[in-house]
Image 1 (cartoon, rainbow, N blue to C red):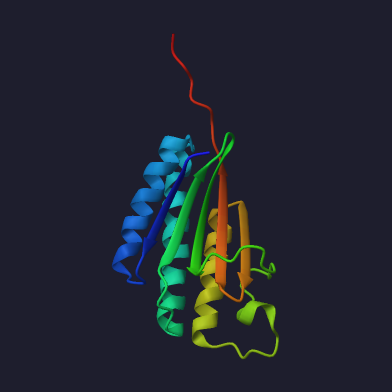
Image 2: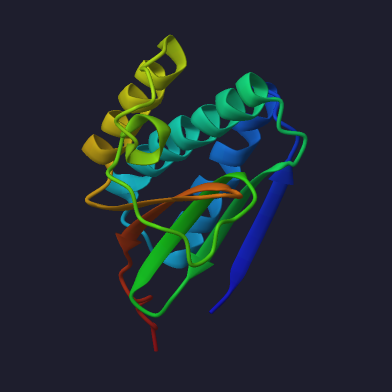
Length: 149
């Protein structure tokens, strides 16, 4: 299970690099060429969302992007803050991790829009939030490489 991990400071100019790396690794993993634009757009949206959250909440930790190639799938996890393992799953786009007492702000509205865009681009999306931050996990099917004789 080959894995590539990127960490970058929360600067918008680094999002493009993450998109390019994600597309290259997805291509190598066997993601269908017709889907690569969706991979690029979804990773760009997830990374832009993470950068925005870092900047608006003063998070000094880097944005983390983990690209994993399995036998039949390719997945990308974009973490805002730290990768939250074993955290509670919240509804996608729920401001404040699903807490109805948290007032919706402009940042929350942008967060919801970003999650809606990602959900429209990727069929298999999981959003996890926890005390250390959140993770968006996106998964695409891969096609096995054909070996020529």
